[in-house]
Length: 312
Image (cartoon, rainbow, N blue to C red; front, side, top):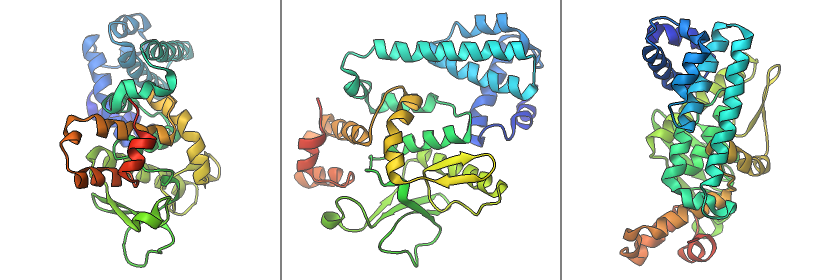
């Protein structure tokens, strides 16, 4: 089966970004099993033999992808049950392996993994539902740009800069340009209004995909375009329900454990970024002004960064 045929078969079951990642995986399985069609989907013996040769993290991604195809094809329920059992077992194995490999206490384990290691885990995660996509996008906001505080739950989506209130916070989107406009935040009395340009291409793509998918879902339920960027509860009958920023803040540790395999609060993400900044050899060679500029990207002072966030 060709890539275009697979895309047509799976269209609508997952987000577009997930679909682009899953189709090559499915084609690689067919090639490895020397099959030109999808008859291999029910050959559990051959599939398990193939997947057991892969690291547990990769194995989890593949079985979730195969399970999605099996559900789309509506194959025998016993085969689907087998895949679901494997997915659960391997997810447990993956989490256990990560925990056993940590050399530091669990609350600091994210520091031993490091920013790049956690970004790799984020890249490995494949969302199955719109709720999963929202959670992965939220975690991406804390890993792919210097971590803000609990500001993402109150960002209003704006497509023009004129007429914005000085009492509200926004995410401005125009083509591939994205900017966060902060008027109200913890250190606003010290630093004033902030206009933060999002430069990471992966984060921009993730945010655009999430906004597109959430809008399509809302419209399908008879709702208007979502006003806020995050944080929503999904209802199959009534659509999206916006939750408070406090709800987002309390949910983030569970999201992080699900997406990247380690519990992290917002302060945990901020500590990760500051530790990464300050342990970089180039940091020690910077001028005081250059160091201040780095810490200001986190909307706090160098003194606060060194006293409150850095951990070694």
